[in-house]
Length: 250
Image (cartoon, rainbow, N blue to C red; front, side, top):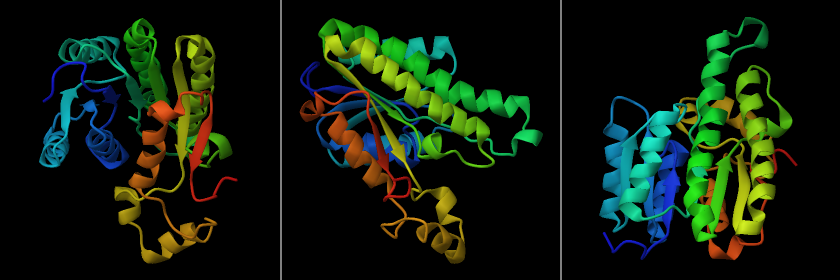
């Protein structure tokens, strides 16, 4: 690991697998110090992510924290600041789904999705903004979804959280612009994941037929957009929603 403050410091929530893992790898590949959280009692995925980054010559460190709990977030962010002397980039990526039609949706499933997907972003952003304000530089990048724009049957809780994240980001962008802190949203469409891997070829083709670019996206497609928004070159872009969806939600 290089000396403190010699690299930008990025925090990724939900970085142990899926899109989050690729975000961690991509940012580490650019030379950033990357810290990420995971919430599962099983740390296998988190340790695999750390090992992958290390093998490629990068640096990352995992912390177990439930981002819907204020005390966990405070502990996580304080530990990052203690180890790295600041935070430059926060990517609120962690999310859960508890799908079901509204008429039969359990109240607990509504609460679980809102707590992680929206409350977690609020808690992490609030904590990370303090060092960003002091250094007068920061990037907040929130991972929403195209369904937060279009809606989706059977996902009222998830859609509400992802739509809320868009409004939240625009407000943060307005509050923080004078301090050279940007806030933007990346809204993925259908992205290759464990869920898409379990689909039949017929199911996949039905999805592809709805996408003008005629393919399912990859986590790397999302990470490329996030990497740009985290860079110095994106300093005059704030309050925007970038849909990484192959044209699905034009």
